[in-house]
Image (tube, rainbow, N blue to C red):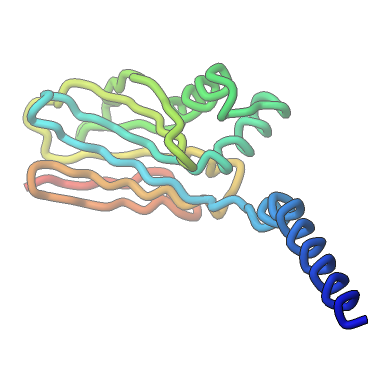
Length: 176
């Protein structure tokens, strides 16, 4: 009798462990949610002579966006075409302007998935004699008003941060 109870208890434990293993992905997806935050790094790279722009998005957020904007069945992990569509969207909603208000011509370089992040890259030659820079970053903000886009601008030993929230459409920095 004691042995039968022991075997029954072991069987219940095994069933419980198997249920946890099988249900874990479903539980994880219930907890997955949009971060509604992105980071962009604008780097004045004196080694390459380029102003480099690196946008980092959570794949989960980018996939929700591309499904709303372009294709309800988009899969950013499996489809390079879907990633290119999202990258095109990013390049249309991010821009840099000189202090005189003229748009700087960023060139699209590419995109890649790195773990949970989707990166989009742009660059251009560093403009001569820049005293400041204005940034427009409206990526994902028309989809989610609570979207937070942080932009870090690194020039020589200076780091300046711009935070796009609410109705903010453009922000500026000045250089010493």
